[in-house]
Image (cartoon, rainbow, N blue to C red; front, top):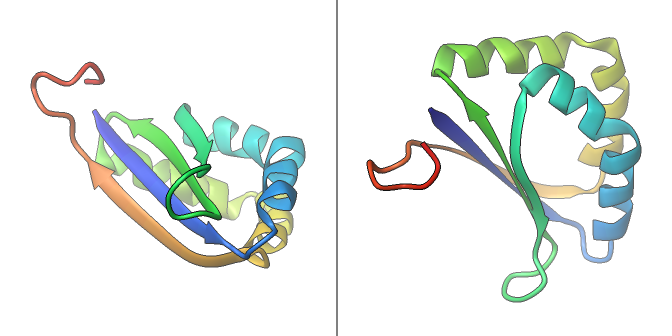
Length: 104
């Protein structure tokens, strides 16, 4: 299994608006195309104004195909600019679990 960890730095004060947009419009599209949502978080202590979400994929090829389908969906194309306007930076990491990890 591969895990994608996406970290977004949100404009100061815009986290509530970002979360509302994702909850009302975005998460259903993401789940439909991307598959297994492992978790969706926002920072409370430490570096603030951060969103972290994790997605699980059986392979990097599966991830690529799923992300491509999401990018091609007209509903996502209409939605994405709404959240992009709230973002300062984006980071994506692909992680593999260690043999002893509870997530495999």
